Image (tube, rainbow, N blue to C red; front, side, top):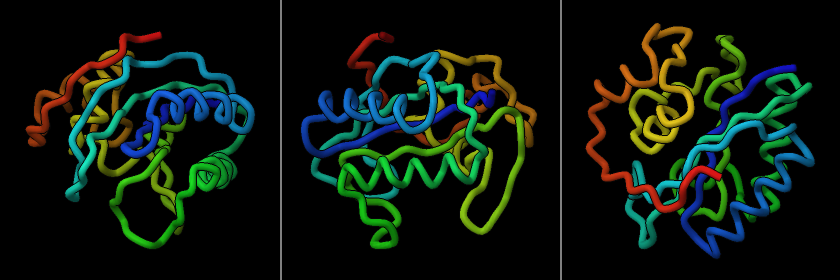
Length: 164
């Protein structure tokens, strides 16, 4: 089984309903959710938006390889109305990013693992530290805590829902 850390988030629609629906689709199409961080309210990152995001990090166990996992993630995002290729950063009901896939490094035309911006995003690092503080980035060789401590992002990250 592959151990995968996913970042999930969205800022439009009924966020609680969207997250619950995402959990169902993730378990149906990707694999078993084995751990969840708390849910955090965060400002948009990289663009301006009317509504704040909810973000969370979850861990799944899956038999899927990374490319098929990505393809199925795109299916789930499409179920939430996401259209790829329009804008890099935009408001959406649900976004799912592969943060880590085991402790592997991979770079293809469609996928880079670990996610290349983990260390720049407090909305990823804060929930990641909550569930995996000592997890080492396979390339940077820093733990989640060390990356958070050196992160230049000064966004205010507010816990809104305790870890389920």
